[in-house]
Length: 314
Image 1 (cartoon, rainbow, N blue to C red):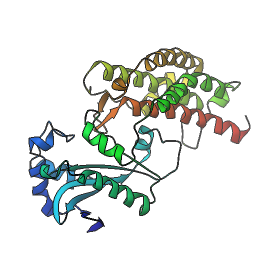
Image 2: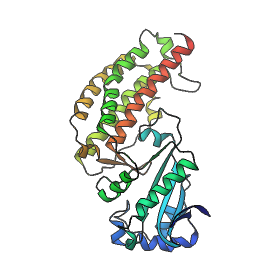
Image 3: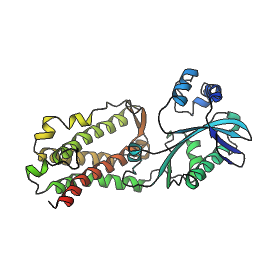
């Protein structure tokens, strides 16, 4: 099925007959050095697992140049978790992500990759009404990053990081102000029907941000470490989250965020490009994007409390 045609570039949905081409490309060491799975050449079973049996909403496509298949591209609308990861959790704008590679090395260094990215941007903006398009390239892949910058993509800027760090710094006081003057009975109210009690929201922020700082330190001191996921909803049901005075977690947030901000302000661009691997989502996350996630996370949960207070007039 044709997705679009732009000059010499054609993008169509992946077909069963394309699997052998993917095997060929993703077992070529020259291609693998730039591909996310470069440490694991793909045989037919892996290609089928990674490109044909996924149950997500990504549109997986073959790229053709003047009728010859030369590469792969996929595009997808960002869901809530991904929006948060990129620091866009506070907007309802339609945001798409895209990933691609040119599998035929003879077609490298001919400007075709730039044409492909430009054409996909045009398609997503004009046909899908995307307001933003994001990518997450390997930080060391200077050639790909140069291509994306030519097409108008911007790196996470120091100014954006500075704002996120400020959000992290202000969170403890915002959380304290959000619950100021509430009685124990009011702190036991759920922020929405079926949701956590307000006190659980405060304790959850302390739990979550402790885990996040550990992940930052692991990524800063190890090479793409595999982090330890946890069941946040189960933690929130433990007795300390349901019964303990919120003051204890407010104090944790205050001390934790002072240390966290002190660390964040010393990190370099190279540091922020470091990553960790989440075995649950099977995603590799950069520290700059994760900073955006937790800047949003604090604002998000404080808003749960303040919105309920506004609705109830308490």
